[in-house]
Length: 335
Image 1 (cartoon, rainbow, N blue to C red):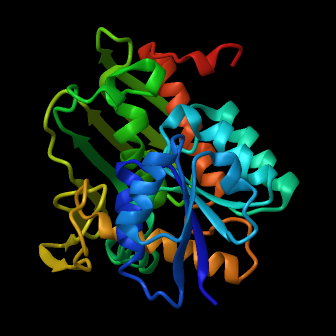
Image 2 (cartoon, rainbow, N blue to C red):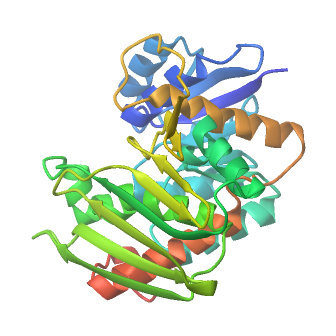
């Protein structure tokens, strides 16, 4: 029986997620309904993607009994409220990254999922790409020895996009793209909590971080350096240095298709989209969707690949980095 998806929001990332679902078998994945804050937007989205049911409010989608899981593609500041709306209605949810604005909100989402006994996962698609699966296998086998250093960079000139620079919209380099760098480091170090966090950077006139560098120290003197920017183009790669070799993701580290191991490069192509996409390699969203399906079929309430403890540690590190650079949001008041 197919997993019946509900789409919450009709924005750009929701469009790409819908296209990615269409690269999977319709016997496994179907989009049953879409909801937007305005009925017209939902209707246009439904017509474009062949979705049978349309709602002009999130509440209507939450009350639809024919939905197995809801994909939440709203902007960051709405994740808590919208996520709780669906989970309190008994819906499983996949929430776009970052899971929430800060650790306090993540704790509230996790508590809501636990109370309602529903599935919750942060949609950090990088974790599920074949390249990331291979990286975990390489590290697990010890092919490059003990990892001593990880460097992850991600940045591009994006300050012309209001969503990325306005505080009220959850803007800033760290929450939007730096999260990819940090999550990759935590994946390499198997979710270990760092011994120390040192962050520096600078803010835009709007008060959000335009550029940030975070240095993490783990046990046994293992290190990581993450650099993220919405103000300049960076290398957008990952380097993992071990005692016996080196692993590189040479480009598109947030949606990787190429992997270099001790100088040998392999390519993991993605399915071609059935219509134009908004973001690079977006058919790769199919992998997180399939992870959700397998978790639901197995009766799991969270993923072992992107667990809730992973998401919790990730946001704690981001909270501390923001504190050191002086970036605060209204959601941090009383936090």
